[in-house]
Image (spheres, rainbow, N blue to C red):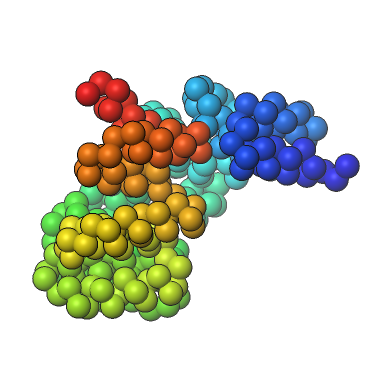
Length: 273
């Protein structure tokens, strides 16, 4: 067998929603020393009833020298509500030369409502050429600081096909400013550029600004078809808003098995309700 055979099989099992089998196979891959096994095993564990085991897997791998996994550890720790562990992991990632971790660390700081720190990290990340940081900087100004003028200025400064993640956040700013035609144009350009989470973002525009509920639902399902990050919680939230509880539950349960922890939170609310 090649050095990636067990990992590849584990990923296939995960894609077939056979998560416990995937975990067992990926543990074998880990023992066999396959290089991508720690990362894939952590992802597989998120789809089980014991997601925190993913952190243990990553910590053991890092202790064995896999410093490239610090950023992933930070991301998963943040999702699991372990803020101190997440911040430590992100800072270690950056200290070890992982420039891409800057953007993720900034998003973490936003979630912690440490907006000034987040802004400084995003500016640094954008200056170093990260293609996600400018879009997140637009979001920071518009949604966290409620400064639409600054958000528009930043978005227009970075706007271009080499930075596709700017289009949708800038479109959302234009929508809030009542410039719906310009917003629609930017969303359509973002779809052509296959920008991050674009179907979800366009769906929210159609839902909240155009009041086109059927069209919005089609876009949320397109997010599923393109396996966008967070598709389950986004679609589930929409379905719940329409009173379609059983459909929402099915969508959220599927997303949970794929590690969408926001789907877990919505399911918990649903079960308590």
